[in-house]
Amino acid sequence: MKYDVIVVGSGITGLSSAYHLKKSDSSLKILVIDKFKTFSQGNTAKSAAAFRDFFSLRENQVMAQASINFYKHLQNDLNIDIGMKFCGYLFLFDKEKDNEFVSKYPNSKIIYDNLSEFFNFNIDNETKKIMNIDSVKTAILDTNAGIIEPDLLSGFYYNELIEMGVEFKFNTEVKRLVLSPLKSLDYPGEPFNWQESMVTYLETGNEKIESDFYVLCTDVWTTKLLDPLGIDSHLRPKKRQIFQITSPGIKSIINKNMFNNSGVFPFTIFPSGVYIRPYPQASSFWTSLADDYNRDFSFTENPEPEPDFYTYNIKPILDNYFPAADSSRITSSWAGYYSYNTIDYMPYIFNSLNIITVSGTTGGGIMKGDSIGRVVASRYKRDKATTLYGGKKIINTYSGKYRSSKIEDMIL
Ligand SMILES: Cc1cc2nc3c(=O)[nH]c(=O)nc-3n(C[C@H](O)[C@H](O)[C@H](O)COP(=O)(O)OP(=O)(O)OC[C@H]3O[C@@H](n4cnc5c(N)ncnc54)[C@H](O)[C@@H]3O)c2cc1C
Image (cartoon, rainbow, N blue to C red):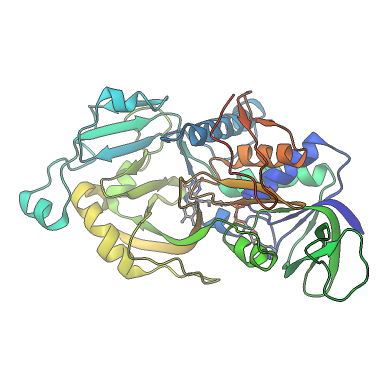
């Protein structure tokens, strides 16, 4: 059995890539392989699954906006429930920000009213000194933002792929991509440097599966597959933890939105980066923090959440800014990884040999998931540009033998 394309990884980026590959050429014979027992059990399942178009880099903005619009189209026009709620993304800054700053962000505005009922705006002097935090000075709301359910979104792509005849192979770990010369001389030690070579098959535990082309959507596991080939994955794993909390105060506000009628409290980021993500199904918030320092880039297969991380890094911030969390308790917690592009937080999508690699989604793979799949499909055809949902285009560049650039910072 030989395939045209094998996609390794069935999280959101693998599903979206397979979907757009098949949509752009229905004759392609595609196989999606995943080591888990079904789709989207990796970091897609561990995500806070929030979306926004508040990004300082225009390319990130455009990729998120196009994906958000596609998801909105699924839910509103095609009546496919993907749990999308436009509850907004509220940024609370302890620094003054002016209208010039906000004007860089297309769907965002400074908010003045209706906040003191929910947040503490007066940090006492002692706390300011000890914790290096200050009272909130500016609140900015991104209205093209909210939450989504990754299992429902993934389910949409998966059902479509099954319908279109794409094959899936679960419970199957790819151990190795095997490089061979295009014209073999049957000498031991091939391929030699002067031979043109490609990945000809991949090895799982007990079989070899052949394909003409490979797409790696393997997130933080990518380095393990690319390192033996001498290809840099350009990603660094960073552990991220989520704690689900509830309290009487949280129960009383979770379905209130002071800005719109979404019926869900806005996703809110406090000064210092601690955030709360509404989880109305359990009258709870998920709270987390994308910490920069004091956590190394080591990787374990099953990362555990650390209660002390909540107690000493997250809770003191909630205690100061968010009275509804008083006397809250943790009802669930888990940990996963961001696959970081540590340079500019853009996803890397690059061609090398007969492989396209998707990596470095940096905490945004769901909100940019549909656009990522479109870039993969267009790079497979070696198009000069990718047309995103809604018509905006991103230039694809292909330079160097092993790696072209990340999505180019040029938008047509
Ligand atoms: C705590 C946390 C919060 C987050 N919050 C958000 C958020 O609010 N919004 C947002 O947009 N993003 C968020 N993210 C990031 C988002 O979850 C990721 O960017 C996204 O899920 C990446 O999708 P993926 O398909 O590339 O990876 P994954 O979902 O991890 O899928 C990779 C798949 O590859 C498979 N695989 C790997 N190696 C092999 C192999 N050798 N053989 C077979 N299969 C293999 C794995 O089994 C897995 O299923 C968050 C992430 C975390 C951890």
